[in-house]
Image 1: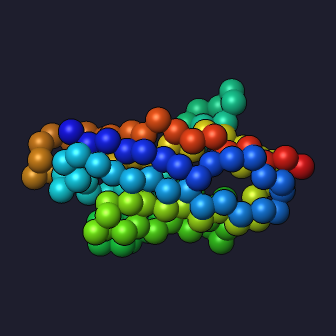
Image 2: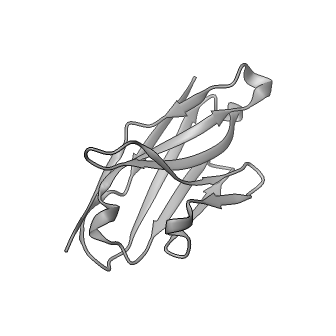
Length: 120
């Protein structure tokens, strides 16, 4: 099993920056791609960014340039640097990790989420 623990959320003013972290534990050798999702009140969960085990990144178009995803493979930790935050970035941010196919069928692990609130 894999456990994911997010940290770094909080309440900030518009224009501020936050850095979210997500640390994997357990069978971390079974972690492949990692990513961040968010869910705002009354909205569906959306993918924010993803990063492969090799470091290739993907972003939702609307966040390119403001958010940066990175990972430390040695620590199986993924980060999300969020700059120039806007009130519309307010959401619960979730970390996700895909199970490596060598460890079993396709599966995603999820963290419990961390709240990010941006005031205007």
